[in-house]
Length: 130
Image (cartoon, rainbow, N blue to C red; front, side):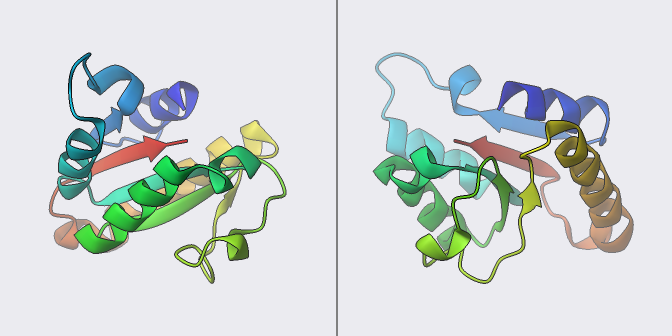
């Protein structure tokens, strides 16, 4: 997640990346803090894997992103099908099984989003979960 966040900021020109690892504090209510962060984001990148598919926390974060109207972008870390999650079914993800290719696709995505929909991006921020 941290490597992806660095690439998004340094190579793709993403304004802000929120990572739970860097932004949560001891004693803080995790669910409330994550929900508040998602409310401020245009897109949520979900690092999708077998572990993510089995995680109740990841499911809560995906649901929060949907309620907030944030775009959900699955980043596929293994061959776990998106159809295993009803909120991800039908979405196109970015294949990160080869990280170099995945990072390149992330850069292309960020450039396309900024050039095509920049007037509609209210927050210019991304959040990453795994």
